[in-house]
View (spheres, helix red, strand yellow):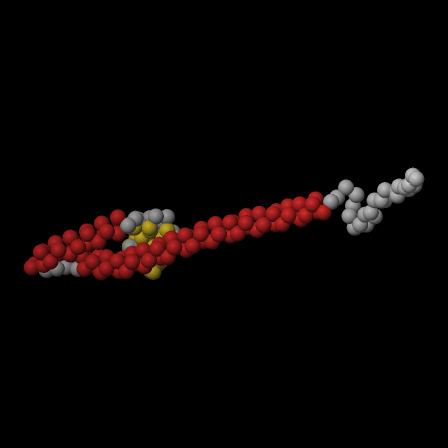
Length: 176
């Protein structure tokens, strides 16, 4: 006897999840999420790298500024010694003071050489026009033989280090 087998119809496709758009699979969604995460991490890496570079530059700049400030402080102290020598050299040493004067002149020359090697240069003021950027007027004096605003005496020499003013020259200025 022949068995009558009825074939069951093939199963209908399972209904798709309405949240999935047509043509998008779970793998594609995961890939998109991974790409977004990768892009976010890459952006954070770039930002951290830039922050570190800025930090390194700031630390280096601060280190240079501290070193410059220490040199400036040292030079200002040395300039006080140079000022003392300048004043001592203007005094009359008397008859027996020739050897003393020669010693003071040698020390003075060594100190001036030291500060020049450090890049410190004196400001030439005598006979120049008064410049408030490099001069500090301490005395104004009437002088018919000098033009108005001319520096007629230097009370304390001014100095620069590179393009930076260490100390302005204290000067006497002619007025009409």
